[in-house]
Image (cartoon, rainbow, N blue to C red; front, side, top):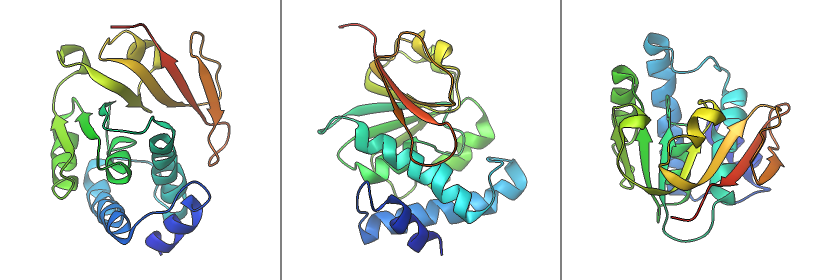
Length: 187
């Protein structure tokens, strides 16, 4: 059910290969298993998970520029949006940053078969690496802008207006959800 629903929901924005669907379904299955013990997400129905976790995350991946990018997902939690982006865009490298040890253990297990992903168990403020793009959906935009980890930001946010962001696109799933973009400065 997950696989068919995901392929159908995401079809207007892109197609997913059988391998991508396999990897996304494996992540979902593991998420359901671990969520009972670890409270990774409050969204539990397969329909809401597909739309609000996977499709939103894949949508971000379609909006990033083409080519090999170094992407950091700050506050990755259950792996959104970073894991779906890495699966959609295997040419990119994605670093998942999660300060909670138990969630980081989940992320390592969930990305075992996704070669382009690494997991960092630390606070984003402590990172010294520069990335091309920073993505996030669980962290305050004000906090993310201060990090100086990447020149370009793509954040999934609720309907609030965020000053200083260059572009805002309505996300097709959910209610009043936006993808906002910001280019801070030239390196």
